[in-house]
Length: 167
Length: 167
Image 1 (spheres, rainbow over the protein chains, first blue to last red):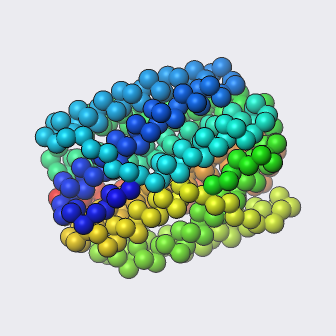
Image 2 (image 1 turned 180 degrees about the vertical axis):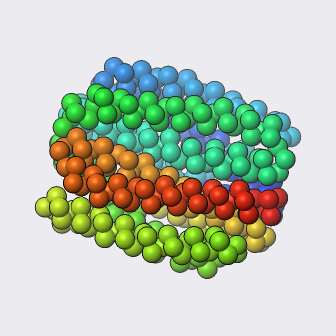
Image 3 (image 1 turned 45 degrees about the vertical axis):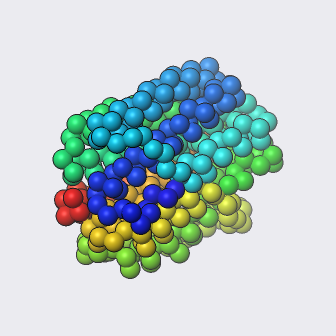
């Protein structure tokens, strides 16, 4: 993702590059989610993806807010990890016939996305605090809470509805 | 990662493909970790990477055990997500000068790996149970516990030693 280019000298540089990484990732997710909404079969899953799409648009705005608080211009940093995870999510849409098995695969793909985001926000919050930017940490914490909630909801839908129907 | 090829008809197929995905990932991590051990500066971090390398070799064996319990031959499924995450981890090794900032970046990269593994094992355990293979779920649960512990330890090292030293 070009995160670790040679101009990273300080924790502040590292923080900004990581912020650019998750900015890229969130914007890619905004583009990817409508297809997952369309492909999901179980109504609760379709609704969860739709709600998370709206939340994700808010996450993009929060990142722009943090860039601004930091006194920097929002800048994306290409991230092959999220590209790979989303590539898998796209592939599932066309490659599993059974609706319930497809839903199980869509949930797995979405939870891989959520976990990537959770680790990146967790890191960003810790780094923001270490450089004395508790204000930035607080904004990022709001998004982390929503990512965790989305992940928990997907587990619930998988275990209470999808997995048994697919098995 | 080829997870969702068109021959995935059932949850059992999906389980086996996902198992091949994490098999590929764990073997890639075994190859990647020695370089992270070598590059880490903080003694506790170096030790944590070294210990996790030994654990990861055990994870590979457990996956082979689960394939065997299932009556299948171990088979890797290429996964661009882990390739992308590890590419970032390699890049950091040569691209940050300051030792403490490098340690912070190494921890972030390793936690992205851990989170990828946690989501995949979590999914595999749920799917194993749904297809009546609680025996497979139990073996995979042992690895998930070790991944979670490794992640928690990295957070502790970051917050108690690395981040403040780097800031």
